[in-house]
Length: 136
Image (cartoon, rainbow, N blue to C red):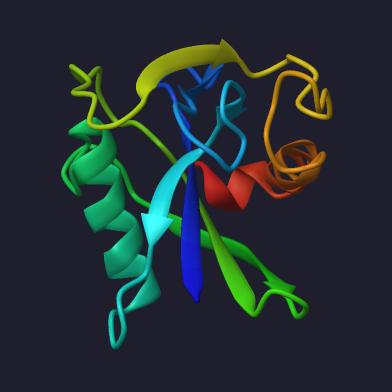
């Protein structure tokens, strides 16, 4: 199975868009938005599709860059990670989970608050390292 998550920075790069999971896995924890990559679907196109479905953010609002992948061999899951910065303020539309802007300086390694066993913190450190190339 292939999944994606999308790291969305606000226009000023001070906040990151998160959803509060309403079901398992990670029910009650904040997570990045994203979803399932359909069979035969291009990863980047899937990220744009999921982003629009989950938040209302379209290709006109953001440029996404493929940051990294995680392969979970025991569960046969590939997770593709994309990142982008909004080019204008947008009105969000929620689908399944409530959406929140979280301060980008928060501790995303806090597994009592954030999904992913610390992976979100690791992803954001990679974004900080490559920021000049990623957030255009």
